[in-house]
Image (spheres, one colour):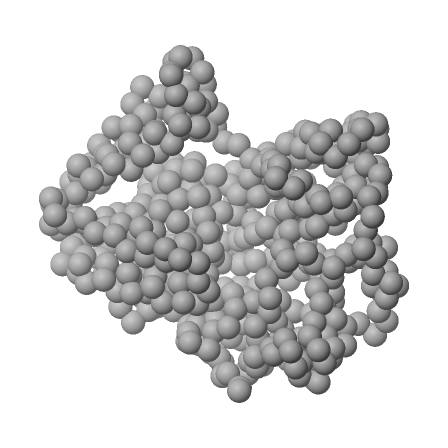
Length: 456
């Protein structure tokens, strides 16, 4: 089967010569793609043979078969340049939009030596694990300059400590301390059932301080969850009685404020069904919820689109939602790995679009794909961005398996706005700053802000 996707809305590569996508049958590989292909930006080597394919992580003299952290590929196409193969993770035969930018691979004429004798790692020394982790970040991490990190100095500080660790648990603690210097919420370290996240945030730290000084009888985690719940529920008192609706398994909530003002809260850019199903099928459910939301808010003059408590999800889902608020095709976001070209993402209006004025509401909690959504929305002139600056963690995650059951994720990709500006670390500042969660009014100020916006 040949899938024509040329020039379709949302296609980030619509300017390329590629016109057709073909499904990958993992049990009977198309002979035209047999062989070895490499994406240097990701450190991925894919070896296709008649019986299937293998994804291999390649870094200098280190190779290891992927343990399942890279999704299976569904579609392939040949690129505009010779020996270029484009691969897609998700099968879009039921969707008219190419929602993920393809990954480009080059044919490898000489197979890396470490691949020809791919080892099943036995236990290796702490120093070897440290070196592989350090080299992985040195090669792929994109934000040392933005975060003012001297990565070489951290190696000098932590490698002697790592070499003296007696077991993986001690090494995990040492590696976590080194990675914490990055203060990057897209940097994670895993060891079996242990996990560490290098991010943080001023609001989260402030909530922790309030909990510690308040002598609450509940745990800190319960305190933060209760704060989140109470802020969410403060919105319900602002909405007109009976107007509240939800869709896509609670990912979207909407209603009206004073009949002429709409409100849409996007809680997350993922998990649009109660059961775990493929992304394309989840996006069908999301589209249905968006259709219903547009119909319900059709008579309002303006809408508050709230992503203030949205921690992210999928940029592809963010694109689908943003397409409901644009009036003309636009360039909205660029993606770039270190040393590579910028891959621009364009957006076109959906079949049903909200026609009124738009307030876009954000806070420091707004992160990851939610920040990509903010960049997309800010490309539209009828949108006013209000609230607080976003988290400043827009990059995608690059997972890298390591020996002895270690796994890291690396922030490897710069996400740029339509003008080429980078907001990693600093966050995306609102056009109109509004304090949402002051320490003396943690819960109720948010509802007051919504009433003020609706009254304007």
